[in-house]
Amino acid sequence: MKVFWICCIFSFLFLSKSSACFNGESYYLKNNSLLFADIKDNFIPRGHDFFLDNFEKELIELDSLYRKTDDLAYLSDYGLVLVLLKQYQHAEAVFMRIERQNPNSYATAANLGTMYELMGENQKAYTWLNKAISLDPSSHHGSEWIHLNILKLKLSEPDSISSMALIRTDFGLEPSPVTSLSKEEIIKLKDALLFQLNERLSFIKAPDLLVGHLLFDLANVSQLISAEGRAKAYSIYVMAERYGYNTPLLQLRKQNLRPIKTALPVETELAKPNLLVQNKNYLYAAVGVIILILLVITFSNYRNKKKELKKYHF
Image 1 (cartoon, one colour):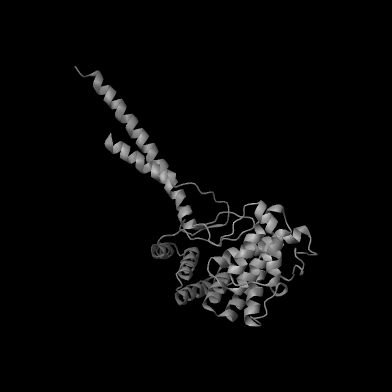
Image 2: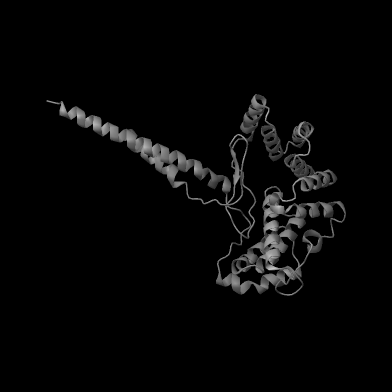
């Protein structure tokens, strides 16, 4: 009985750790390992927190499965994990091998583009990303044109950042953003900015002026969509500041939002929720439920056997 109650407490601890809700972007490696699963937010970008505890273990498993099956999807994810480990030269060799065996793959071109940008080789990054977009313009929710514009700026005039150069529009100089875009176009632009920022916040730490400017643009466009977007814009302006973008226009728009900030609780912290911990909650919940079910079955069997023995006890 003592062992039973200890196990019950153990399973309860597993269950009590599970409380997160995930409906955002997620990615599973080819070996079914969850790489990341994001909490959905329609306006505030958080970046990905990666679920895997042991990247080296995943590399071994992906390599083993590739050797057994010759499935390039395993090799592609092997290269992706190498990028996350910042083993760029090894990752480059892997992706180039895939390109030779299976040329003109969107995933390979996009992975090479991202990897070269992280290495600081922006011309190569631009070439491969441009190829990726030509292969699949709709990928990444059709937002890669913003990524391409970022690389154009890095290659030509890195100190001449503007909304027009990054997103092909701006929102005026008034205390509140203005636009000639339709509602549909505004929502599409917001979604593209949100997707690109979720990607970039996963790898790029503050300060970074390009990220800061994109956050400024996201705050502007969010205000034009809904009351929720207007309420959350203040937090996004704060994030832009922390990434190093701070202009009189940003301060004017922040000041203009202060009544809304007072009326509605808004996240103002740049720090993301620890999704690495929250994602593990799924595992804790599953293990806890299984343990609890097994314990109930075991205890029920134990009681039944005890009753049977009592029948024959004189």
